Amino acid sequence: MFGSRKKKNKLGFSELMEQLRPDLSRESLGVGPAFPGVAPNPLLSREARRRNAELRTGTLALGVLADWREVSSDGSPRVVLMFDVKTVDGISFRGIADEDLTITELTRLESGQTMPVRFRPAVMDHYVALARDVDPAVVQQLADEIARRETA
Image (cartoon, rainbow, N blue to C red):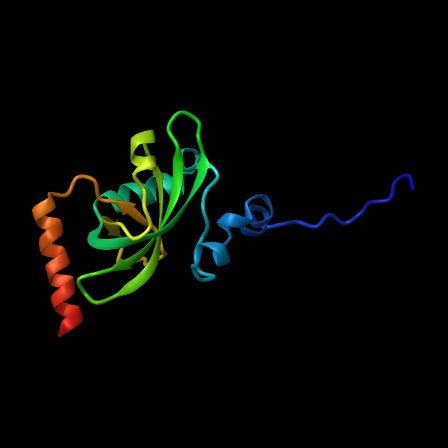
């Protein structure tokens, strides 16, 4: 009737994202309830820009690519990469990287690939970033340390 107000069901960010993109839900990505979620546009979020800056200087680890999802393709493809991450300290977790890739990099993605990633050990919020600037010799040394720790 006129003048009646219906209660609107207010959805939080994570619930809205689960409805719009069920492939980006916490369950689909394989992360726990503490994961803050994938930002629709990380360039517009101050928190996401700060997180990305911290990840660029984060601690080095190895990630085995489990899966990926294309989020957008405006210019260069934006992809959410899911990694099974292993650290030198013996910690294993599911890591999520939100990256802009070139078409060439996108076509070379393959499950099971091992890639160097950076994470924030003080936060441990499942966010990681590709460590593209790392020398291959350093990556090999890291892989050897992780393998040595696993066999010990």
